[in-house]
Image (cartoon, rainbow over all chains, first blue to last red; front, side, top):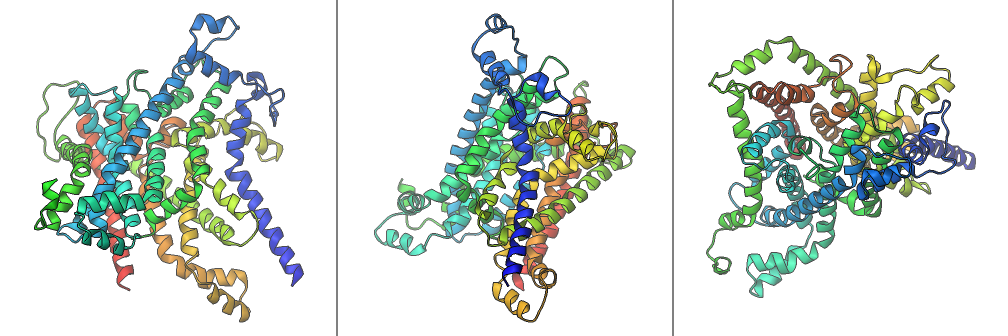
Length: 297
Length: 297
């Protein structure tokens, strides 16, 4: 019996090791490459870990954002266009993702409540259309949206992106929240109504305060969805005033010349930090959110 | 707030009031654009020409009779089927591993969120670096392992370009599928396994005869969702291959983008987007009939 247990552990841990190499390894390699010197990452065979540790790539991005070209070149360095606008694009992404997250959760909570708790004609039509909306290819929406925003002079603005990103975040949020609201015992709500609360007060004073874990989970997922959005940002943004981090990250990769490879890699690492940190800190919430969104029907 | 105090207000009306902000946002960002996209698809709408006449289904007819469309549809189908096959297979075994009870599995589950949290564009940046023709670690590892005689430009030849795009896509999408399958696994009762073990069934037999059949509903859900998402792929193609080499990774999403925003033919681009939407909708319908049947059982 004991030998089979040992065999079992060997099997499980070697499988875990393969898992780590395949799923975490590439990410670690990206981080390690970003801290090497340009000449080090171009060595064959590769240098496995950065020695000496160099933060030149990050310096290019940070100095590029805060100082002008003449100051940076004092140190014998130059910064590419992408590096100079990268941190600014981070701020744009942050503003967009936070606003999308906030508005989607507020609008979504009030829309999810009747679906979870009330019987009305057309409830299932509403629920079904919310699901269908989630499946609409963004490209089908992108064409008219680009035409509209050009005509209305709304392209290259953050507010446009905030609004558009809600097209795919809001249905997801409603779906998650209606599943969450169903888990709150309805006795609490009944008690509130006997005390004379109307539906609106019931939502504000009973349902929402009790749903804080669900609201937080949903807000985080909404943030992450919006943070990674690329297609609409690519089509709507035209200048630094609204470029998002994903757009500039793509510009880094598709740049023909002028950008050093370590900087491209560092840009990738920086873009990953907010979502990965979020995901790891809130992993329990996120997992429960991901599962309730898909499994519960 | 008099509206809410009125006890006679019907729940339908109340539901409408509650969801009004969400419905407004979705109307503006989803419903109206879709209607306008249908309108565009029925017109000859090229940005360079002032005349934009109604032409019925001409755009659709042209697309359906062009070789380009069938080429990119088959590219999409090849991409989607291989990606879904890889995702389902790997996720299944990964979920079996994470369902085991061993010290450290909580860590593995948390780390699984890293690929999931990485934005698509950054995922493309990561794989672009891993696959670099001169300094990529995949070249280095394959060379050291003796699999290749010299470094290979993986993304510039077929079939390796398609294979690596599928791998890069799957890498990011396996975590969510794994979590979903894991949730399904946890509903499979342990006592069934134990009694089978007493009868002398091997671990493999138990997986095949007990786990697999009970997991079928979950696997079907994951299968259809993953297929729908894989058919919509765009970000990864944009950054990693731009549809190349030649047109070998030019999936539907990429041809919609090229048709619309590079050739500026909004009419035929919209028609193509509608066709992709219909394919998605068709898959979704299969999905819902399946779910309905599952619920009635």
